[in-house]
Length: 164
Image (cartoon, rainbow, N blue to C red; front, side, top):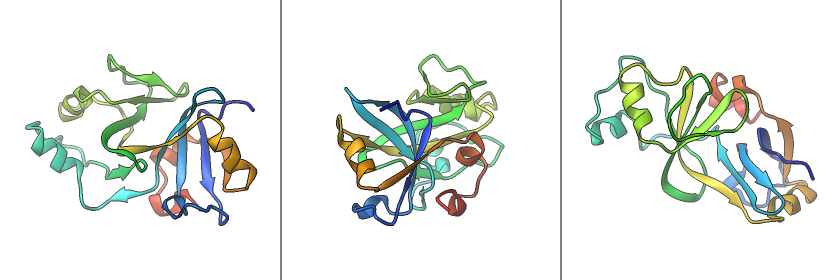
Protein backbone atom coordinates (compact mmCIF):
# COMPACT_ATOMS: atom_id res chain seq x y z
CA UNK A 1 0.00 0.00 0.00
CA UNK A 2 1.21 3.50 -0.78
CA UNK A 3 1.62 5.99 2.03
CA UNK A 4 -1.43 7.87 3.22
CA UNK A 5 0.64 10.82 4.47
CA UNK A 6 -1.10 14.09 3.50
CA UNK A 7 -4.44 12.29 3.12
CA UNK A 8 -7.67 12.48 5.06
CA UNK A 9 -9.30 9.55 6.78
CA UNK A 10 -13.04 10.06 6.80
CA UNK A 11 -14.90 7.89 9.31
CA UNK A 12 -17.68 5.88 7.68
CA UNK A 13 -20.92 4.73 9.35
CA UNK A 14 -19.18 1.33 9.69
CA UNK A 15 -16.55 2.84 12.02
CA UNK A 16 -16.63 0.45 15.01
CA UNK A 17 -14.80 2.79 17.43
CA UNK A 18 -17.24 5.41 18.77
CA UNK A 19 -14.33 7.79 19.51
CA UNK A 20 -13.84 8.25 15.77
CA UNK A 21 -17.43 8.56 14.55
CA UNK A 22 -17.91 11.55 12.23
CA UNK A 23 -14.26 12.47 12.46
CA UNK A 24 -11.86 13.75 9.83
CA UNK A 25 -8.23 12.78 10.45
CA UNK A 26 -5.26 14.33 8.68
CA UNK A 27 -2.53 11.69 8.30
CA UNK A 28 0.87 13.16 9.21
CA UNK A 29 2.94 9.97 8.89
CA UNK A 30 2.26 6.50 7.51
CA UNK A 31 4.32 3.48 6.59
CA UNK A 32 3.55 -0.25 6.65
CA UNK A 33 6.62 -0.84 8.83
CA UNK A 34 6.00 1.86 11.43
CA UNK A 35 2.23 2.40 11.44
CA UNK A 36 0.49 5.75 11.19
CA UNK A 37 -0.02 9.00 13.08
CA UNK A 38 -2.74 11.52 12.40
CA UNK A 39 -4.65 14.44 13.89
CA UNK A 40 -8.40 14.90 14.12
CA UNK A 41 -9.02 18.30 12.52
CA UNK A 42 -12.77 18.74 13.09
CA UNK A 43 -13.29 18.38 16.87
CA UNK A 44 -12.78 21.66 18.75
CA UNK A 45 -12.60 21.47 22.55
CA UNK A 46 -14.78 23.90 24.50
CA UNK A 47 -13.09 23.41 27.89
CA UNK A 48 -9.63 24.71 26.86
CA UNK A 49 -8.86 27.80 24.79
CA UNK A 50 -5.67 29.07 23.22
CA UNK A 51 -6.18 32.23 25.28
CA UNK A 52 -5.93 30.03 28.41
CA UNK A 53 -2.73 28.44 27.10
CA UNK A 54 -1.17 31.84 26.39
CA UNK A 55 -2.14 33.17 29.84
CA UNK A 56 -0.94 30.04 31.66
CA UNK A 57 2.37 30.26 29.78
CA UNK A 58 2.77 33.96 30.65
CA UNK A 59 2.83 34.87 26.96
CA UNK A 60 1.11 38.03 25.74
CA UNK A 61 -2.11 37.43 23.83
CA UNK A 62 -1.87 38.23 20.11
CA UNK A 63 -4.07 40.95 18.67
CA UNK A 64 -5.51 38.56 16.04
CA UNK A 65 -8.39 36.26 17.05
CA UNK A 66 -7.27 32.74 17.94
CA UNK A 67 -8.73 29.51 16.59
CA UNK A 68 -10.14 26.90 18.97
CA UNK A 69 -8.05 24.14 20.50
CA UNK A 70 -8.77 20.77 18.88
CA UNK A 71 -8.88 17.24 20.24
CA UNK A 72 -6.23 15.72 17.97
CA UNK A 73 -6.93 12.19 19.15
CA UNK A 74 -7.08 9.87 22.14
CA UNK A 75 -3.31 9.22 22.46
CA UNK A 76 -1.16 11.45 24.75
CA UNK A 77 -3.90 14.01 25.21
CA UNK A 78 -1.53 16.21 27.23
CA UNK A 79 0.76 16.61 24.18
CA UNK A 80 0.27 19.75 22.07
CA UNK A 81 0.74 19.86 18.30
CA UNK A 82 0.67 22.68 15.78
CA UNK A 83 -0.43 22.08 12.18
CA UNK A 84 0.51 25.17 10.20
CA UNK A 85 1.18 26.72 6.82
CA UNK A 86 4.61 26.08 5.33
CA UNK A 87 5.68 29.71 4.85
CA UNK A 88 6.52 29.69 8.58
CA UNK A 89 9.89 28.11 9.48
CA UNK A 90 10.35 27.17 13.14
CA UNK A 91 13.56 25.35 14.05
CA UNK A 92 11.74 22.12 14.88
CA UNK A 93 9.15 20.93 12.38
CA UNK A 94 8.23 18.12 10.01
CA UNK A 95 7.06 18.78 6.45
CA UNK A 96 3.84 16.83 5.89
CA UNK A 97 3.26 18.28 2.42
CA UNK A 98 4.58 21.24 0.44
CA UNK A 99 1.88 23.36 2.13
CA UNK A 100 1.56 21.91 5.67
CA UNK A 101 4.01 21.44 8.52
CA UNK A 102 3.76 19.85 11.97
CA UNK A 103 5.57 20.85 15.16
CA UNK A 104 5.46 20.52 18.93
CA UNK A 105 7.80 23.51 19.40
CA UNK A 106 6.37 25.79 22.15
CA UNK A 107 8.30 28.73 20.66
CA UNK A 108 5.50 28.91 18.08
CA UNK A 109 3.33 30.46 20.81
CA UNK A 110 5.83 33.34 21.13
CA UNK A 111 5.86 33.81 17.36
CA UNK A 112 2.06 33.92 17.26
CA UNK A 113 2.03 36.37 20.18
CA UNK A 114 4.34 38.78 18.35
CA UNK A 115 2.48 38.52 15.05
CA UNK A 116 5.35 36.55 13.45
CA UNK A 117 3.67 33.12 13.50
CA UNK A 118 2.25 31.09 10.64
CA UNK A 119 -0.42 32.56 8.39
CA UNK A 120 -2.70 29.58 9.10
CA UNK A 121 -2.50 27.19 12.06
CA UNK A 122 -4.46 24.97 14.38
CA UNK A 123 -3.38 23.75 17.82
CA UNK A 124 -4.32 20.23 18.86
CA UNK A 125 -4.06 18.14 22.02
CA UNK A 126 -3.36 14.43 21.54
CA UNK A 127 -3.13 12.40 18.35
CA UNK A 128 -4.47 9.27 16.70
CA UNK A 129 -1.98 6.43 16.23
CA UNK A 130 -1.98 3.01 14.61
CA UNK A 131 0.45 0.13 15.03
CA UNK A 132 1.91 -1.44 11.86
CA UNK A 133 -0.93 -3.03 9.87
CA UNK A 134 -3.70 -1.70 12.13
CA UNK A 135 -4.85 1.12 9.84
CA UNK A 136 -4.71 -1.18 6.80
CA UNK A 137 -7.04 -3.60 8.64
CA UNK A 138 -9.47 -0.79 9.48
CA UNK A 139 -9.48 0.23 5.80
CA UNK A 140 -10.25 -3.37 4.72
CA UNK A 141 -13.40 -3.43 6.87
CA UNK A 142 -14.55 -0.07 5.46
CA UNK A 143 -14.10 1.89 8.70
CA UNK A 144 -12.51 4.75 6.77
CA UNK A 145 -12.63 6.41 3.39
CA UNK A 146 -9.41 8.02 2.19
CA UNK A 147 -9.06 11.19 0.19
CA UNK A 148 -6.07 13.41 -0.66
CA UNK A 149 -5.99 16.20 1.92
CA UNK A 150 -7.00 19.76 1.15
CA UNK A 151 -5.28 22.75 2.74
CA UNK A 152 -8.57 24.66 2.56
CA UNK A 153 -10.41 21.91 4.42
CA UNK A 154 -7.83 21.85 7.21
CA UNK A 155 -7.60 25.59 7.81
CA UNK A 156 -10.57 27.35 6.18
CA UNK A 157 -13.60 25.04 6.32
CA UNK A 158 -16.08 25.24 9.17
CA UNK A 159 -15.56 22.38 11.64
CA UNK A 160 -19.16 21.22 11.34
CA UNK A 161 -18.71 20.84 7.57
CA UNK A 162 -15.29 19.13 7.45
CA UNK A 163 -16.52 15.57 7.95
CA UNK A 164 -19.52 16.10 5.65
